Length: 315
Image (cartoon, rainbow, N blue to C red; front, side, top):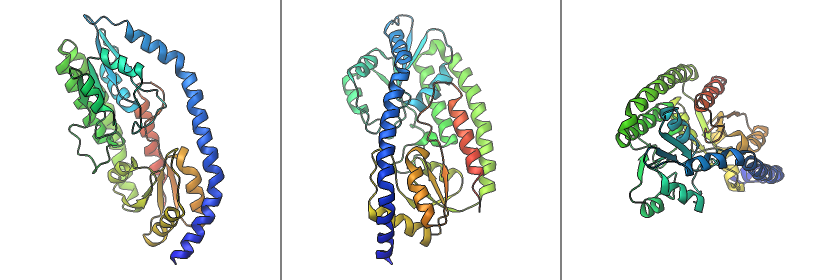
């Protein structure tokens, strides 16, 4: 039986090889074009931060997209506070992010640096060593993480905890604007609470079922929807799937009774479609909320779409 799975897996990998190359090329091209598209706005944003007056401006820097959106809703249009993001909005997760000279210059000017924590920003030790006076706000400080998985923003409830932590720390660091932070965060938390209630209703509709995860961030989704994760793999732009791994996924689908795969469309569609030719499994594509525009409601919109997608899971 094992040899049978390996044989099928080799065939699957043959079909996938061309699509993997094309996907990688597409992602790299998209990143290059995305960087060009955002260069003017981002450079202008950074130019603005260069001109801040340290006597009157409180400069808040965030590590990457979900932390920026959370902090943006807390800061709002507060006069006397400057907010900037370290990475481009299309960077994604920061596991392998390398700090640039420009990044270090921004960090040297920041009064507070908001990070997700939990190991997502693997460069944070270097930052705290070089800038020991920089106030680092760890958004996951009060979050009960899933083992070593720190993608807490994928849980609306945990994201709300992150928002509270960021708002509280900013108020303590910048008491002049504490009332604004409290007011803005309360308004944002109210919107998040409404979204959380919608998620809970969707979870009750789904009931218990077994799923495979094609991105580690979806462990939070599985937990919040009451789903049992029985396997899968973590796919991204650099991921090369082996024949053994493909065979193992087929085994999990058939032997574990996993009928649903939670995947990120950009990196998981080819693999999911190939598996669907060999097994009866439903692919569900979710937003990991690590890319997008800088609108204040972008997280709300992305998670609402995820809720709508989860409602579409069928027996």
